[in-house]
Length: 108
Picture 1 (cartoon, rainbow, N blue to C red):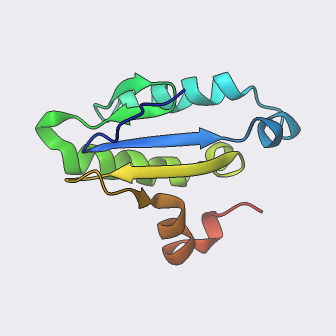
Picture 2 (tube, rainbow, N blue to C red):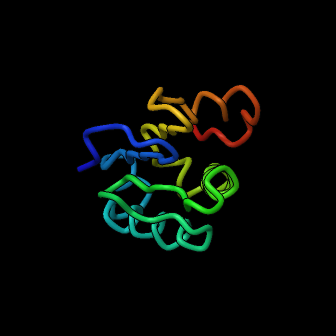
């Protein structure tokens, strides 16, 4: 489903199939919507649920994508995890960051 080895300047999102079904979404459609939306920031899909930032503007493209996704109700209603990787392969829990800084974006 996702890339096995962490890749610098990438992120992996996982959706909950049961939540998605309850909210009227097909899980595959959610991944396709993420892909469509992050392409505008120059990200490239590596695998189902995993995207790599644009090499020319890694910081900007990844930050803009993650910020955009965290503001989408269809993402936040159905997400299980959103893990980002920056310079290193140390995982960053982006949902935890959103909970701390923008708790109003978290859906119960």
